[in-house]
Image 1 (cartoon, rainbow, N blue to C red):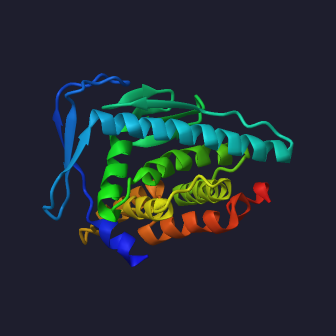
Image 2: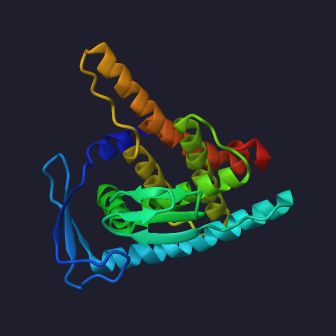
Length: 253
């Protein structure tokens, strides 16, 4: 797994926008966006076609996720309220507050998954270049993770600790990959892409200053927003991949 950590740890996207884009889709055919990495390697160029293809994959994954979790909830004797899937660019106001650029999140107040489609397409492109694949499972994993939050909350799971909520969502994304394997919809390289995406999204190491009060404040901030280290995120996804939803939540056993 170290290969994923080494590759993912080098990626820090820096966007240089060419052309104008509307907030919720469309976009100019001339649109292209470049993303540089910290290693001064060739930038990743993202085109409108890349984004369109990524959005199609996200939509297909959304449909599969809804079908999977609807069937699982039915087995439990309850109904799954499928969240909406809404893409945006540059930031958007939601019932859960302002969604920043380069992000994806589940909003409980509106039962909606919001995702910046440029950001999601970029993650796929970066993973594809690093692994020599199409990178699509890295993008799909983002949607599966946010759907995992919806599943967990609708089953009554919500922890005060950020990491515990995120660990469950990562695990449920792995459970989706497991189901995709059973359905025969997994392509060569998809699991590597999923692991790469989890590793790339691990929490950064906080840079403490040596000032006790400032460092304590930083530690609390990190804890409130923790998604887990690279190793933790990969392991949580792997738990779901190997054990299904039952490995993630007692309610699914």
